[in-house]
Image (cartoon, rainbow, N blue to C red; front, top):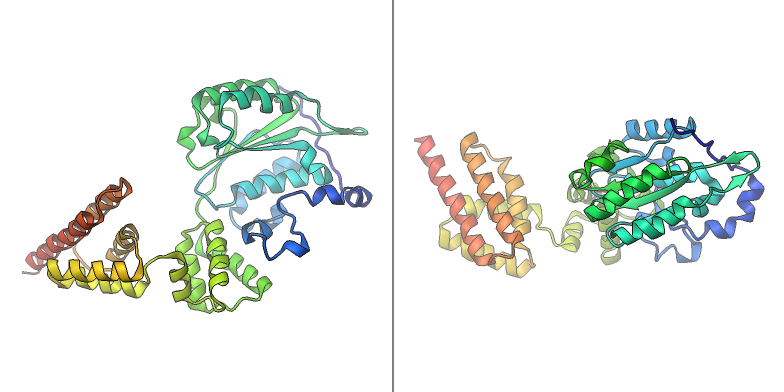
Length: 361
């Protein structure tokens, strides 16, 4: 078994003071004079593992492994905005303290994803000796964000680098789609899945930011932020900051207008037309609303799909309708004609309406 190198423990106040200027180079440190220009995603990024509110089971496990000097290679995967990068950066701060920037190599694999990066930049960093402080030494950390964008050749080369430099280097791979990581890399890492955040954790974090920034956000506005985020904390904070720039009061309507999403009342109106009006009338009214409010048809289809779950109807009719809308959304993603797809949407509801009438009789 590979010998475990003791992790560095730097908590000395003098060291922290002497390296204050170096600390300010970190992307998570907010310079007071630049706080207004700082994206809130970075300004309120958790600085320690204790600050990571969600996924406590994963965070506590990684924290325990770090404390016991048994940190393995990590593979963190899941949807965007669920705390993967924040967690591993908090681990790095716990390990290295003031020497954070000397002991970590952070690469975005979507930009640096070729085999040359593995053979040169990563291997050069991994092959150098770790910094030692008296009797204490530490493994270094290489963070590969968006690792699922790496080429297959680069992943195979990385497999060998991980094996060769395990003694003095740990690798943390972060990705959205774990199936794009080759099995040989997956088997060398401890895997943790970060699921979308639940509404409670998104709401609590948003309330913290709202209080810190002294924002005027009614309950309906907060609910809209949580709903549109879909468990993505990064998206929630970006919407909050964007809406604040456009409106003094962050109401539900302001949130939807800022993001370009259809308002719930607009979706209810569109659904009413689809279920009750003729093909020609529905096409005319939806097209007029779509143009007047600048709505994207793909957003309308997505929101109407969610609305269908609230309508009482036989399950077979509901399933067919949802499948039809999924097909429409897929065709829209391929840049198919909006007018044709709107006609297809109305036709699907016309068939569903006929099926409902037949079932009632």
